[in-house]
Image (cartoon, one colour):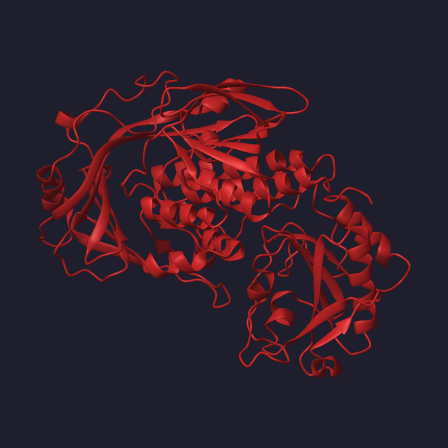
Length: 561
């Protein structure tokens, strides 16, 4: 007998994301966390544009937009002199900017979204161990009352942090190392008049040009409120490496918490302006390690977030990478539990996400040692990468070969190809909509979607046939709609029917952004996955090979009917 479909260990942003997406898709799950309550700490504070896009797809971005603050850029100082001012700018079609939000607010938002599906967190409940077989996982837990229980689930996800019980239970390696420095974190207010919305990085160089002191400040919601990090003074130093059973020195450490005078002393040395710290809400000492597991899953058990990868906080990549781990895994688990998945679908979680973790660990370690300016990429590429908008899965087993023809995607082309993020587009028009729509408006709260492009009224015939073919091949699990070229005869229609008589919505590319950003000149089909990546880009839509190409693309994800 199965108690639940999925047991999730850990109720941080990663575990909550997995639970929220699973529940949204109708999957039964339980979430346990050993802590008795949400911690009121501003630990991970940076929210990347890509994460906001995911929350948009999940239907929960509004709550974040109401409390987050925009990150406009960073001011850099060395020995008291301003060295640079970076503006965090992205292309205008990207729907969200960089943002800052305390981790406890992120957890509150996702937890409240999860509650809409009648699912809460089992607080004070700890995973002690587990065993698995071909049919499921048996987990041993101890509840807040001290009762020992066994929970049988079809799958187990370890989102239980750097000292993960799930990772240890799987026997995964966690290779890497620790940085020798120890740091202080503090959530404080200051009275300087530096521009709002800008992070501050102030360094001191010794006589040989080496950095021997550093202050990093990230804006938080509130009046001149920042999450500050700085080197720890000797009297607050902790034992660091070796303090935990698995010798992973990462995150908040024991020992005395910094007092406001410790923070003020660093500000007196490094602040670009004379300032006084006040209203300290929280402080701690922490260490940084860099490690990566050798596998993201074994059988029916998976790891995500800090349980799989830890690295420096440079660029606010950690929590965001973990959230994307969870979302990538959740839609695949939901499809597998429904019974409509390709037998190897779940294997793609490791194939897609472990290379991302490896790249993030390597890049953040490099940036922590040499600075973000160490890269030779242009500033636009740097910003897109930091925003996590360049993450792609071109080598994934789920990605179909690019059949878009010359210039239609793939490496070296500006067109999004299979495995790339599907860009948003503005200016889509519908017959009864008085205002333009975004492409992401049409993707919200959906699973797989086939977006068909028609360049004329005649090409709608091919779109109608393709929509019907996909419906038959995927047993109705793929939605479909048409984007019609602006100025074509198709624009007069607010909708069509596919070749089998089902309604097929048609939207006009009123601002020609879809045509420009997807680089389309002829009729084409784009299979967009639940996580917003292109599973396939197919053109032409007519001819003997068109149905076979659609079948091949769908067959990588769905079980053959």
